[in-house]
Image (cartoon, rainbow, N blue to C red; front, side, top):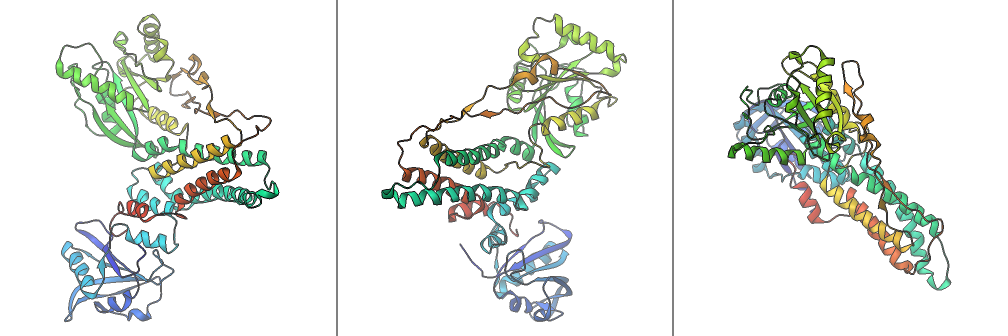
Length: 512
């Protein structure tokens, strides 16, 4: 797959614009570019300099005035001689220029071929190459922060640190295999188990961030639920700053889920407006209610709305996930304390309000979509909740399915090492549910804090004080260590295959 022949592609989006850029890279491109260039001699252009000139059609006709920027290898993105030609954004000019380059002997680039060459030439590793696609696709500050962190090599640094630790252990184990007849122990088994456990813990922690990483990348799903006419569609519209949903006083207006995204405090949320929950004989409305329950299942957090002027119409949400109770239409009852009292009184007396729902309520907030009352506080609450387990601005968070799969495979190999050494496999700890007690259910007002009391699920390991004598041969332990090292090496591309590379780079844009 390693190629260095000249390639070219349009790097800017398709369509008409002010400026379009055509990228060229490969061995021997400068003599070929000279055939269509009128201006300063390309051979005399210094690297990383831009020059005004003209692109000419064979025969001397000018195609367009242009700016050519030169990057001489290896000091270029691809590590090869490269150039970027900026012309006016006419689609005809772009296509004609690309045709001219092909006529000189420069072939059209394949998807991701520029980044692939950068990888092959050591300009970036595989995780950094994948981060380029994520930077281009980022729809929020959080997604951008995660991609930039990966592009800067922070993931690679962490993976290489883990791999280096395992390589050191593996080298000592391999020595023992070589001198097995001498009955020599080069590495203490307790120390081997300790380091293996530390590496596995780190691998597992990174792998466990994948669900949050996907949510930050694609939008954290938030279901907006409640009885008919509770104000769900009005809330969706104000959160999106758009009239996305039809608002009506007629109950049952929303009969299907309506979904759209909005960025709040740098984090992308995917809001799902749902049909009102109630008993109905209307076949179409019942289908909408079924979809409401489906939306609840896939949501990471639920906004459950109750019309505070009619608190008896409150709906409990039997979902094993965080719920924010929103008391809507607060502008109809200016006395907020009275409104909260009415709601709390109803919740206490209502036999349908069980602990299953209440125990998941992390906050209660009275709002008005008409006046905007407490809407900004709700947005802050959502953003704080999103960052409560992992912060995309500071934490290492996995967003790539391939990375997640590789980390799980490495963890499985490390588990085999631990069991071979006589250590039991890790077991989930008893979750600390104190954060879901009644003490954490609090009424938020303009002056109250907006922090969300959450405790990430943790994993506890039982560590024996004495090693159990293991019957597993040393060479099998070495084999499991090599497997773990192999998996970590595939993350950064230290070890890879053509199939993996083809799969990764084929999803890139042409021109990148």
